[in-house]
Image (cartoon, rainbow, N blue to C red; front, top):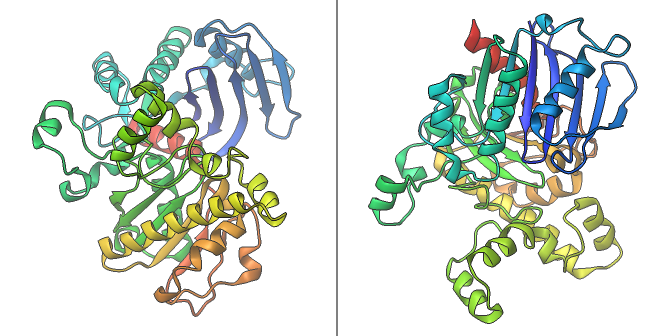
Length: 397
């Protein structure tokens, strides 16, 4: 079966067409600047990347251009929409309503809409993408795969905040976690590589990118994760603050004369390694270049980031009463050997021994711990699109 995987943002749309039998990516691309002017990037397997400026007032036009590209006589990879057996949609927030992927129905969409206030920048866009696909591909089965679903196995002791219980009862204020599709995919792949049963492992996954999170996966289930009600909690990230004393918000608001929207702009878009580096960059390549050139703020930003990751890893070793595997994934986790080295420098007490040559590789699936290491440390590139395709097919069987 060919599965079209759609990842819809407010002004963008990523897509891949995957043959679920061979797991080959037949084509992939991106629609961006939707609602502004519009640009389509399209690349068939083994072919050249094509970029075309196209008017995209809404996501419906964007989806239509994707379909046109996939079925194009010259560079298309299918002859007609009949060759697309299903569509898998990434949906960011399922709240407590979805503990697994779900076939898209009217009832399901209403339930997702009820979660909109928990992810106001993401869920509405996800629903727009679903509606556009339904209009242009009527009769094609569609599945929603939720970022939050994998974390619905967390026990109450892990997801409850120290706030009045009525806020949970009335508003469902609790930890939900994100990057669930990635954490699930990578932890399963680690078990496959090591040849151990997934339901008999203690794995900590470090998904490190512009948005970063750490998850404790005990016997195949998420038991704790660093992101919370929103993706703001947890690690210091590209531009997000991560964990801070909440009283800081009141203090800064008074000093800078900021309202709630202003404060949220600071902690979401002006903080993290970007803010720590003196607004130098949120790109770790820039930070390393600057640190190597003697920029102290860039050095501090890198150290703070790695220290926070190591603290969460340590906490999750305690949560699971041990750890068998630590896995690095996502843009920074897969490619930045320096960050991995900084993080692992705090974890010697676990009996970890690192192979420096292996750690110096980029973007490869590789074991970076030595054979005698008491904990396996791996780098595993994440593949959320493949995970979504797998979930889609499994649900439709």
